[in-house]
Length: 322
Ligand SMILES: NC(=O)c1ccc[n+]([C@@H]2O[C@H](COP(=O)([O-])OP(=O)(O)OC[C@H]3O[C@@H](n4cnc5c(N)ncnc54)[C@H](O)[C@@H]3O)[C@@H](O)[C@H]2O)c1
Image (cartoon, rainbow, N blue to C red; front, side, top):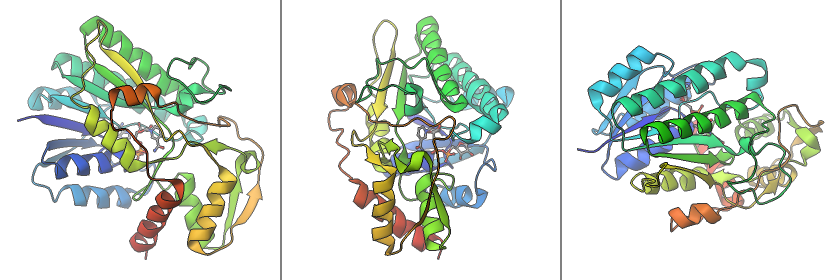
C-alpha cells in the first residue's frame, strides 16, 4: 500500500491536492497544526471534506515539534512526502519573522530529517516565485539568480531549497522543488488579494492597490498546481544528486489593474480603489518560464484563463459565505 503524506493538508493547496489524490484512490495522510494565521473555520471545513474519504488519515501535528513529527514518520513509513505546511504570506513576514523561522526553517529541517531517517522515495515541496526577487529579465527561468530575496518569506523559501540540496547530495534524498506562482481558486486563502478584493468590493469597502496597481502577477489556477504535483510524484529525480527545481506558473502575467477589472465585471460592481506606493518586500512582476516544467510534466498546460479562474473563485465565495 503506497502511503502519501501531504503536510498543510488543511491549507488551500494541500486541501485541493489531498482531494485530488483521494479521488484517484490513493492513501493520503495529512498533517496540519491548524494555526490561526487565518480563519480556522475555513481550514476545518476543508478538513471535513477530506475526512469523508475512507483512505484519508489526519494527524494534528506541528512540524516544529521534531519529536512528535519523527515519531509519526517512524510509525507510518511514508513512501512519498509532499510538504506544503509553511507560514505563507510576504507582507506578514516583515512584522512576524519568528513564525517563519519556526515553521519554514526549523519545521522544514524536521521534515528533511523525517524523510532521511525513513528513506522516503521522493520529497516534493513548495517554494515560491518570490525567490526570484527583483529579477528584470522575463520569463523567469529556474537557473536565474535567486540569491537576492527582498522579503523574509522569500529568504526562508530559498533557504529550504539550499537545505534540501544538501540532504539530496549527502543522503541521496530525491527532491523536487516547486516554485509556485500566485496560486488562486475556490477555497482560496483569506489573506490573498483575490479573497480580499472580492470581499471588500462586495461590502463596498476600499481596496488598496500597491505600486498603483502596476504589479504583474503570473496568477496560476490551483487545479494546474495540484495536477502537476500528482503527475510528478512518481517522476523521481535520478541524477547523481537527485534534486530538481521547477516553476509552476501559467506564463501569462496579468496586471493588478486588469485583475480588478475582471473581478468588477464578474461581480457586476465597481471597486473603490485606493492607489498606494510600492510596499516593502513586494516584487514588481512575476512571469514563469515553463520550458523545464514541460520537459518533466508532459501535459502541463495551464489552460484555465484568468477570467474563468476568477469566475470559479467568485462562485465558490458567494456560495460558501452566503
Ligand atoms: N498560495 C500561493 O499563492 C503560494 C505561492 C507560492 C508558494 N506557496 C506555498 O505553498 C504552500 C501552501 O500554501 P497555501 O496557499 O496552501 O497556504 P495555507 O496557509 O492555506 O496552507 C498552509 C497550511 O499549513 C499549515 N501549517 C503552517 N505552519 C505549520 C506548522 N508549523 N505545522 C503544521 N502545519 C502548519 C497551516 O495551518 C495551513 O493549513 C506554502 O508552503 C506556501 O508558502 C503558496
